[in-house]
Image (cartoon, rainbow, N blue to C red; front, side, top):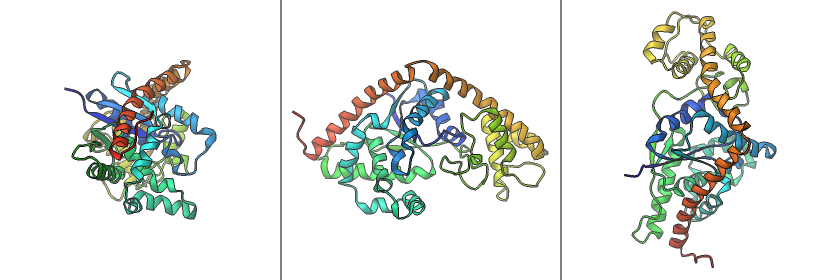
Length: 335
């Protein structure tokens, strides 16, 4: 029996942080042997907001190398760059033409980000959920790992697939409907400067996040300066102490201890005792990732060969799906 296929990706905008790792990538790694995995660096999505052209290519390669450093195994997974496969852009245009505009203007993330960009908001920001749908549908993905903030996008993907199959399938299923793969509870990592907001690459403050490639002295500084409260004794799940809950959760996830073990260990600690403990745990957890990252980048030609193989394997599947879509729409085959 063939394995079910998973598709997921990360934007190459800034360094990956603990939120990306604990909320997504570590889960990919732990479950990858169960699935046929396709993990891409979604660099087309990166330009839906203002970006730096001088660093886009380097950031793209860095994310791909971090996939490998975090434990993505090429025996079970394929790594590729979104823009290296033109079918992503072509299918997006074809799906644009059957996607009602109001479906896109109703997307919550568009409304939130459009407010930040003001009157200069680009069409790409409105349209990127269709690009995301194309990413998923191109690979006949059975499951897509999603968090709360991405559920609406997966629902849109399913709506687009249903609409396309109804209008052009002639009784056949041209595009497979993907199912959500819900992340396990407890991997939602919040900002170090505000325990009520998610840790984010877009936060202007570097102190709000711990990046996977931060050196030990930077990690130490960030944890020393992270927001806490004046209460002695550390506890989970107190709505009046979101930062306390977040930092204990980080310690729990990176130490491998249970919630109950951490609760007992930390119930009488002050911040002056806990912060060095958390610092040591974070550094210990990230050191193997950083060492593997350096090894990947230092092996000449290795990363390029991984991405070249990924492009060929993923591209073959994408082209097959694109051909089915174009045939259903009535296009002629290339001569």
